[in-house]
Amino acid sequence: MEETKVEAKIKPQLDQDARRLLKVRRRLKDRKPEFRRYEAHKKLRLRDKSWRRPRGLDNKLRKRYGGRKIVCAGYGSPKAVRGLHASGFQEVLVSTPSQLEGLDAAIHAVRIASTVGLKKRLVIEEKAKEKGLLILNPIQR
Image 1 (cartoon, rainbow, N blue to C red):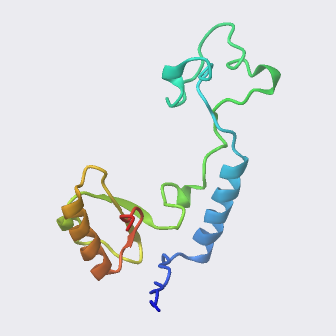
Image 2: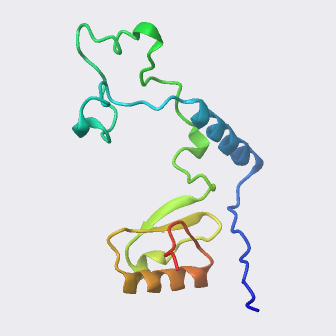
């Protein structure tokens, strides 16, 4: 019978306030509406595009007519945890093994760039594992 190796889950070193704010951010993101570009459901080219503010004179979304939601201040996450990964780590995009130098396993998590090939990806993953860094997008084996 094969033994499966269970790795301990790596956690960031965060103070109590930062942990609390991450939970607050998660709760706020659940309540935030999904802002879609005006009439994106009608036009294929607008489906996956980012938000653009409606500027038409009679635009009902711009006028917030009928309870329509528009992007405005107040939907943001707390400043102390803004830009952090959901796990609490600072996300670092890596495309070469040399970019792992100077990263702290207690603060940083690694995301390997999509342009990296398999050969170099395996080298990066091995080096990150030696340093104890969390890899956010490991190769599926």
